[in-house]
Length: 454
Image (cartoon, rainbow, N blue to C red):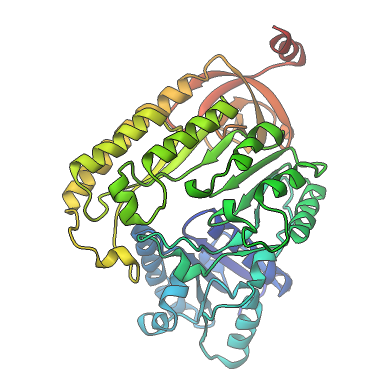
């Protein structure tokens, strides 16, 4: 195994959601302590980890394809260690070793804490390793990730797992049942991040609304938000993901009473048809969902709402699909992540009959996405001329002459400015709206005061 400056090289490829991204950050921290340094060049790596997601078929296909491409690297460098982690690893377990002879280890969702031990075992014995057992307490939930230089935002996992068992979802089977961290551990991590220069934290969980809902004696989620709000140095708070059935009045009121809580919520709808929602086992109706969105906007008029949508669920008729369109027209989401339904091994809906044809699913997805593009542009154009505060994250991907940041409503804004502003909150006037971002111009203090007192 090659060594550079006394340290071996680690490459991590992540597929999936924000929780997977944070899991990868935790893996990197553990392996840095074990003598690895992270590289962005897979060809130079001594250890490659593929961190996977199995919720969507496309993410799974990408992970399998990437694993296949690593075969030639292994042939060229037999000492290269290749591992697969995350939901797909949990789902397949030891079968992965049979399908991929060049794979050295399989690490499940409850075993991130054992990563260094697994790598040491492979280096010492040359044997392949599988760790996919569920733990009574998931130690890896609380692995802290120190802030990197010039990093301004960070993820903090507050709970893992899910008890809802939606019929299309594999998460409870690969992430396990809900487990919540103590508020003391969470607050200690957030204070550490604030001391390291972090200005914005995103609280993560498969269903953050149900944090400590088991009567454990810890604060519930609204109470936790109030605690985080008191941390000096933290300027913004976000959270994801929420389940509509668990969106309480107390949590909605936090958008009024917790001043650092950003005016954005990701609230998966999945379908606007009550019949489909029942088959999905979502435990709310389209009417209930609309009532909660209306209540959110009553409490916080400027709140932005994003969502998840599935088209082509087994048994979905054209009338069912039209009901989803109807809800979209009423809510007018700021953004939506939309997918055509696909069977996942082991989930309840895999056994459902009346599957929707692929061509129909593709057509419905196209129509839905075209509508959402219109709604997103409408919401973005509504911000032109307004003054917004953005937290500067660094250089824009679009131009080296621009810096980029997000509004409190989670809109990306590109603006001419100096990289030295990274980590600060500045006021900008929105001058242009596009499909995925906004354009702005920074205001000086006099202009800001004029806007405040106008």
